[in-house]
Amino acid sequence: MLSIKQVKEWKRTLSNKSLLCVIHSFCKKEDHNKENLFNSLNYDVAAKKRKKDLLNNKAKIQYFHQEKWIYVHKGSTKERHGYCTLGEAFNRLDFSSAILDSRRFNYVVRLLELIAKSQLTSLSGIAQKNYMNILEKVVQKVLEDQQNIRLIRELLQTLYTSLCTLVQRVGKSVLVGNINMWVHRMETILHWQQQLNNIQITRPAFKGTTFTDLPLCLQLNIMQRLSDGRDLVSLGQVAPDLQVLSEDRLLWKKLCQYHFTDRQIRKRLILSDKGQLDWKKMYFKLIRCYPRKEQYGDTLQLCRHCHILSWKGTDHPCTANNPETCSTSLSPQDFINLFRF
Image (cartoon, rainbow, N blue to C red; front, side):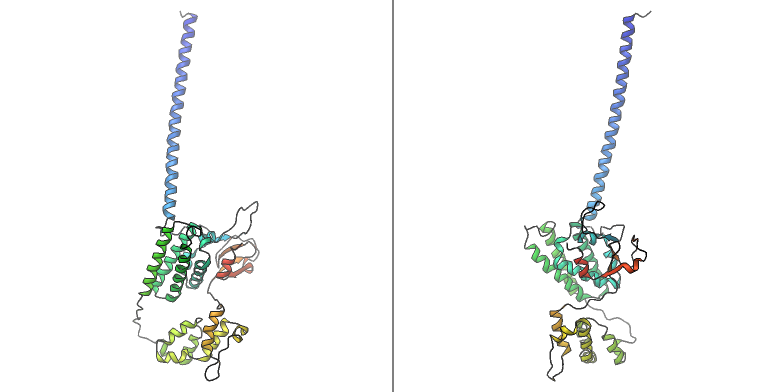
């Protein structure tokens, strides 16, 4: 029979064993939690690395958002904090797909040109990478289609000139990113310019009716639809007959009246040797003094009811009874002005 002292000793031993079991179980649980924590950290690091690889300079994929519209707000409220920036809008709107649409191509190119002239420093790092990726797609499209060559040459020259000015001001925090990265981008622009200069326009093998085979009235009708006087000059260099048509006074008169107001025209009158108005010379003088009229097949639009910016035809969450009547088309300059606070 156990004594009272032996019973107490036995209980103490059991208590110590239970405590050891609890400690051992707790330690195993801690090790399990540490392992889970380690795996979680590894997952987070891997996810961040994938995101960084996607957004680095070598990535050819634009950083996309699911929604193809953006809410434009110019102040902070209880529901929305901060401001909507030009860079954020540039990231959210689907410009990569827009350049593949012939109705939107000129609009996007004009917008890229305006950003290159004065808004590069307002773009975030991600927005600048998206800008360069979209520009590369534009250049590749022109190299394949052999169309709009002069338009893209002018865009690249504008961008290169702006970057030369900004890079010279290094140390004044005018550009986001390392200076070496921007020098590399400038070298890329020079390479694109060289590619465009080396384009050899291939004559199509089609042997049917050509432009010069059409009646003169139809040729003039088609030429009247050209909105750039430089296109008329280039067309006149193709054949002697087209050279005569490209000098038509009525053609240049309509071009002047399309782009400029009567008041602007009256301020820049030029007479020819025969005492008549020289509409061709007046046109090239007018474009140096005033901006030309811009016309695009498709534009970005702003909903006045819900302040959402999107491409025409893109669905957005609008609470208006008739959303179509609330939309206002924006020119590229209007788009830039929208983000000037």
